Length: 92
Ligand SMILES: [Zn+2]
Ligand SMILES: [Zn+2]
Image (cartoon, rainbow, N blue to C red):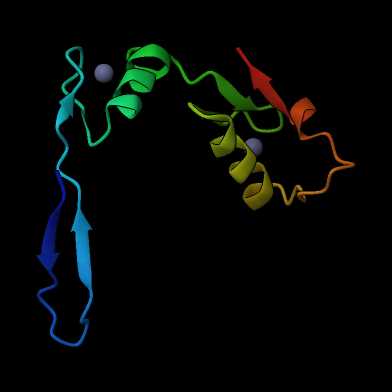
């Protein structure tokens, strides 16, 4: 189900697509718009420590992409194929 909400500001003539969060994690009551996201949350995130982490500063993230983004922003690790970012990411 998709609900279109008209933005309250008249100068922004865009429709905001609002996805109602229909799926609820029965453990922590977090809500998700997609079932697949909720299932991933229950499998990897709910009640668990983040699996991935930055080997430089110890930052932890539930998803590898979060740690990769952290590496590029905080530690200026460039997205080059010859740099093996995996050595900078620990995976529990
Ligand atoms: Zn949960
Ligand atoms: Zn870090």
